Image 1 (tube, protein in one colour):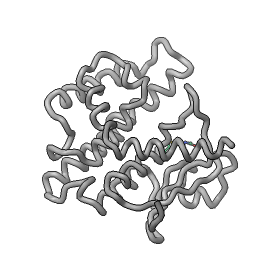
Image 2: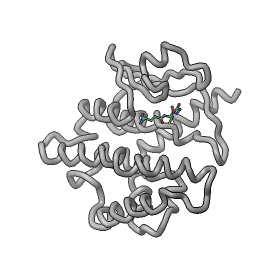
Image 3: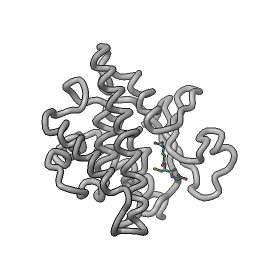
Image 4: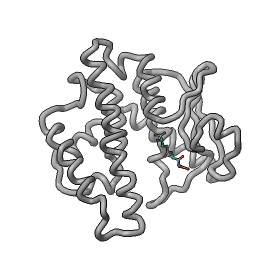
Length: 212
Ligand SMILES: N[C@@H](CCC(=O)N[C@@H](CS)C(=O)NCC(=O)O)C(=O)O
């Protein structure tokens, strides 16, 4: 696809069992564009030797970031909300539906990912007695209670909040933490959307191309 939107990612990341390939956050932006039918290009930067040009666009030196006709946006959540302004498919336009979408988008980042990422990271070097274990389990328990009662998080329909929450939850380690029967079917439901597959395939193909 080509168009005014450019999604930036890394040139290459490792695949295999422990590599991040398939989970790199540019996928969130690709997925949103696919859902909304927005044309986009993908460009990439090296993982190592990130220079001043990179930091000028992403102050923490990370990816993804988005370019939209001269407007640069960093932080995947901000990029998703920027894209959601372009398409009702990502966020309803009625005030209540919009407010629900915003709150659950922020909740995915600030109440779930804010806990799961450090928990996962500590777990890489310390499988037993992870000090964040109870915190993660509490958050997932409360989310499970919500998901047991509804199909989608906000506005009674798929929104960008589901896209983000499912992407945060779909890490195998998160999905297998504790016994939360409503969480996995929710993630499966959201990730069964054709736009997720297109985005995932696109990311895998991008990194595979750089294997050669
Ligand atoms: N809060 C940021 C996190 C971005 C992030 O963690 N990006 C990863 C790739 S998925 C990265 O660039 N990691 C390298 C680093 O943090 O230096 C967002 O949601 O955009």
